[in-house]
Length: 296
Image 1 (cartoon, helix red, strand yellow):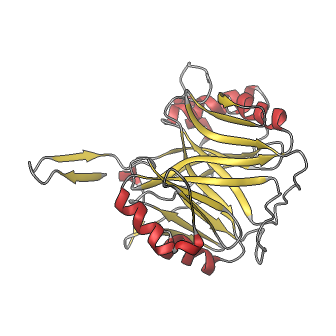
Image 2 (cartoon, rainbow, N blue to C red):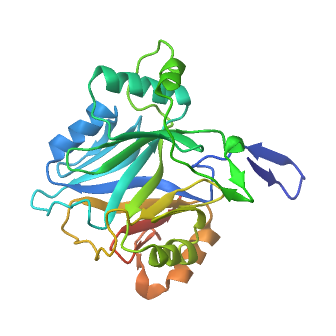
């Protein structure tokens, strides 16, 4: 829960903590793909995303008119492997628990290949891959007031998901595509080592380290369980990713406050960020993952 006080009036506003209510949050994710029709068709068919914009070599997909995923065609790109640094998964956050239940029903009826399903205490999630191996999470958050803490530290777990309970929550309404209000809740990356990642994502970019697993760290803004994460489960010691490889092209970070945007840019130093005409800027981590910060 977030409490805000208006200084002149003393009025207090209370709102539920969500991935989108925080000072920094994920906007859209851009991927480089070899086979644009194949990959675009997968996200439309399996996740129910809609085409928001297309120009031939690029397709923007989303929920309603809100773009969440940009696919850029590069037919000659090298195919990334699971041992390379880069994208672990893009996590699509649905508005309510019933939505996830409806998607599970749809996936079962259409024999969608699921790679995993977990209850993380803060969220309930299922995992799959697109045709070029880009990881996908589709999930729903539990209310932030129910997230477990021990001695002030958030406790995320990996336990069996109660599929039956989720399917029951769906009721009789069928899955009708990615619901309006869906967002990218977080992006999980493959990195080469955890200490270097923590310095960059926490000390430099300003995200809080919200949790640590063996071989992984999680980073959030404003109390959210995580907007970004990095692991070395398959990529320990990985070198910077090639720019002509499939997979992650860019992660857009939306920043609510001009002062916060300026402070982040200042910590980076002018030599380490490319500033664009709209005052947004792009920075790359040690493994060449690009993040673009803009006001929004």
